[in-house]
Length: 179
Image (cartoon, rainbow, N blue to C red):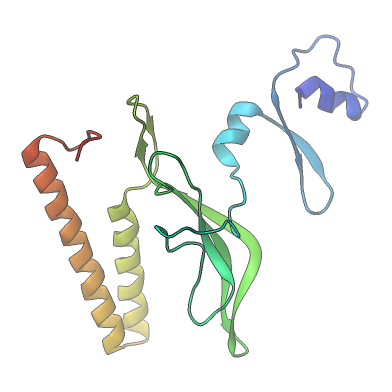
């Protein structure tokens, strides 16, 4: 929807305005606003939860002990969907069950397109370091041998990724779309 088209629905004179491309945004409470195309496409994400999985993906998935599908992946032709994930926000474990909110979060990983364009996003290691930090803090508050084992395994996973990167650097293919 063009900006002028939106403003005219609000009774605003648009004779001296450029009709920029954009989107009508309608919120659950009925409020409507208009967003320029470039900002909208950078900040808003398609709802993915509920997308069907395939044989090469673990997603969508319910996280134990819940049966609610709470994670989904946005599929793409090049990688099958390894760069954008969507999460239903958790409300924790309450009254004997896992509870979820009706809001979502998205995580996008860095992606290099075949033409060389780079779409910014997280590195896997950044996310893993956050997970280790979180679980060290949680395990300090609520000590558990299983918690310590989990922390060690994630730290081991980070080291495996470092080894993989070193190997790709040594072969001269790091940062390239090559095997």
